[in-house]
Amino acid sequence: MSSNLNKSMKNIALGLVLFLGIVACKPGNENGAAENAAEHAEEETNHVELTAAQYETAGVETGGFSVRKLSGTVTANGVIDIPPQNLVSISAPLGGFVRKSELLQGMKVQKGEVLAVIENPDFIPIQQDYLETRSKLEFAEQEYQRQSDLSKENVNAQKALQQSASELKMLRARLAGLKERVRTAGVDLAGLEKGSITSVASIRSPIAGSVTVVNVNLGKYVNPTDVMFEIVDTDHLHVELSVFEQDIPKVKLGQLVRFRVSNNPGQEDLAKVYLINQKINDDRTVRVHCHLEKEDNDLLPQNFVKAIIETGANPVNALPDEAVVDFEGKSYVFVKDSKGERSFDMVEVTKGISENSFTEVKMPSGGSESPQFVLKGAYALLSKLKNSEEEEGH
Image (cartoon, rainbow, N blue to C red; front, top):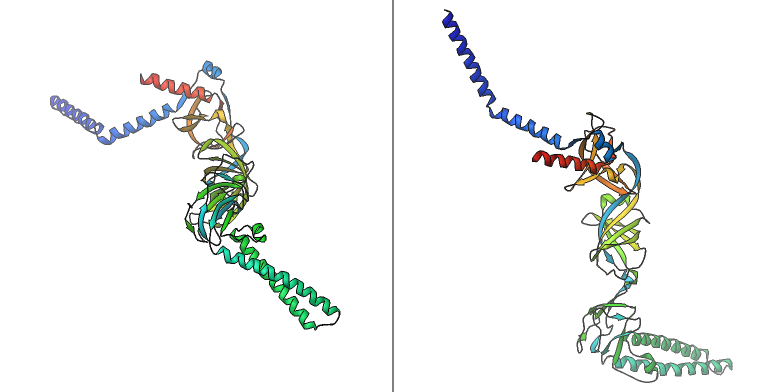
């Protein structure tokens, strides 16, 4: 009886061992153990403890957030642009054949300088009409004077004087119109006044600037609507920015703009917001017109611009710049934990505005409401943490 009881107890014990072994070998338990180990390892890699000597050597100082008024900013892209009055398209109002032009793109020209000489036979009748009308006007002035003198002596009728005055006004108006046509055509008016009639005219620059477009060659016929040249006055460039509609409420007239151009990213220039368009474009942006603080001859029209608009000071949670460490493309701070005075966790954060040696810091959700940070010695803690990891790896 006793022998059978011992045999039964052994079988039960053996079965219990086999059951526990099967349960322990289930994949779910293995995965759970692995996850717990990974989480524990991750916590350990972000945790650092210092000895009293290390704490003193690193010069660690701790403290909470500082509420600082840092300048808010809006980022925007745009181009260097020129006012409409500083970009001129040159054409020949009456058309003609190009007989002379030595302009090349990039050349500088002065206001009134001859850009091209064109020839058109239609210039001749205009000049003939001008000279004939001028001669008739001289006779009409003399006739009016004669009729006026006779009228004083009551020799002739008042009607004749009125007819003479009407003829005089008509000829003066016609001569003024012909004079404007001659001037528009580019014909030398001084030479014409001396009786010199020509079939050529000079096209002159209305502004001083740089030649950006040349669309002519010798012998080419240009119509009145053809653009022969384009001239740009780069002395009054401005910055034209595209600001997203959600940022527009932050942008005000007179705000400072810091910008860099694509062909010279190492140089920063300044401008101020001058005009804000009241229309939202199809790409949901608004045009913002900015005037340069100082003219820069190195800037070129249509240079691509990256700009920052300073929108004003706002109170934010900030830490000294040295409290935020950068590692492998991310930003971190060290936060004191509950394990001891010299025990810290490295926490990833998001940086905001930086100004006057302070940086806005945004903590992840779920943390302490009033954390204590390492304000000085953060890089020493980072070095200690990474050196410890390397030693454990070996």
